[in-house]
Each structure stands twice: as structure tokens, then as C-alpha cells.
Amino acid sequence: MGNNYAFIDSQNLNLGVKSQGWKLNFSRFRIFLEDKYKVKKAFIFIGYVPNNQSLYTELQKSGYICVFKPTMEIKENGKIKIKGNVDAELVLHTMIEYTNYDKAVIVSGDGDFYCLIEHLAKNGKLLKIIVPNKKHSSLLRKFNNFIVNIQLFQNKLKK
Image 1: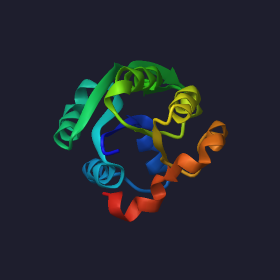
Image 2 (image 1 turned 60 degrees about the vertical axis):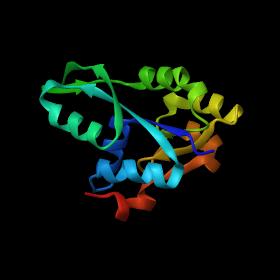
Image 3 (image 1 turned 90 degrees about the vertical axis):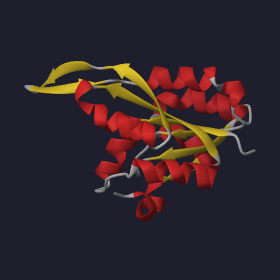
Image 4 (image 1 turned 45 degrees about the vertical axis):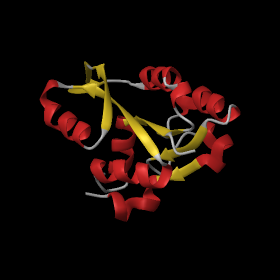
């Protein structure tokens, strides 16, 4: 069982780690996924913003496969927020790649992935759910035996 893939909700990961008061070193995280969970391919789902090209290049150099989602600018309370919800892309790619990996590591604490996680677990294809912060969706409680909090590895993974 050494051919595992990771499917990463970049915004959930980034915001979750930031809310805990630290920044993730994405390069170290990729090595961590390989060493700890035998992740051969790591798909990171991210909203595409042209000004972030250096980030995307760095992610690709670190061994991530970037899957981009077009973003939208939304005005909230007079401020412009950039939205690039990647949930559908993560689910779709997890299923497109389904026969290519032994087990999946899902990196997100978002309850929107409940049906995907349930399907993977039911079919013996779920290895871990890495949640980025203490507060993850209560929908995922059913899968507590798969959940690991990234905070446990903060010293290894922080910038």
C-alpha cells in the first residue's frame, strides 16, 4: 500500500493553519505526505489569481499537481474578496484518479466532502483526513478514526 494520493483543499488548509497562528511550509508538507503516508501524487486545488504565479511555481517545484479554479471577485462589507471554491474539483479529481491509487488522503475539515469521504471509507480507499484546525465539520465525526490534526506536526511543518 505505497501508492497513495493526497487531495488538498488549499484554502481550507491555508486558512485553518493561519487561524492557529502559524504558516505552513508547503515544501515540507509535501515531503511529510510522502514520508508519513506514502503519497506519490499530491493534488492541490487552488483558486487561480494571476498575481500569485510565483506561489504556483513554488508549489509545482515542491511536487504538487496544481488544479486551478477560476476565481470571482465578490464585494462583502465594502471589501473585495476573491472566491475560488474548489470543492467540486477536489471531488471530481478524487474520483477520476480512483483506480490509480491505493488510498486517498483528504486534506480538509470541510463537511462538504462528507459523501466523498463516506464513499472512500466504505470502499477501503480512505487512508487519512488531515484537518487544518481544531474546528472541523461535525459531519466528519463519523470518521474520527481517520482524522489527524495537522497541529500535531506544527514543529515539522511551519515556516
